[in-house]
Image: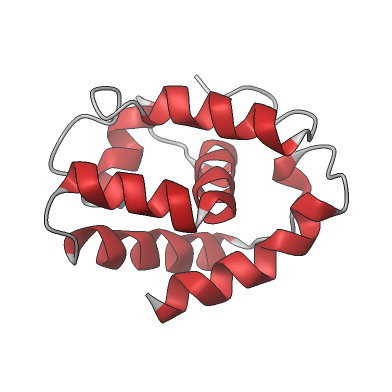
Length: 120
C-alpha cells in the first residue's frame, strides 16, 4: 500500500541512524492516528489478519515498530494490547497473532536502544 510505503521511507532514516529510543522519533498524536489508520486499511485489504500481519512485518517493519512504541507512549487506556487491537481493527487478539514476540524480535534486529520506557 502506497501510504505505508511513504511511512516506511519516512521512518527508515531514524532506524539507520542508530536511534537510541524509538519513542524519540518525532511523531505527533495526529501522525500516530494517521499511521494506525494506514495500518488498519492495510490489514483490512489482506485476505486474513494473519497474512496481513506477516506482510506488514516483512514489508513495513519500521512502521510496525514505530506504531507499537508510539502507541504505548500515547495510550491512556487500560490494557495496551486490547486498545491497540481496537485501534488497528484487528479481528483477533494481538497476543495470539504474536505481535508482542515480533515486536521484541524486530526491535533486537534494529540494534536501537529501548522502545520507550516499557511496553506492557
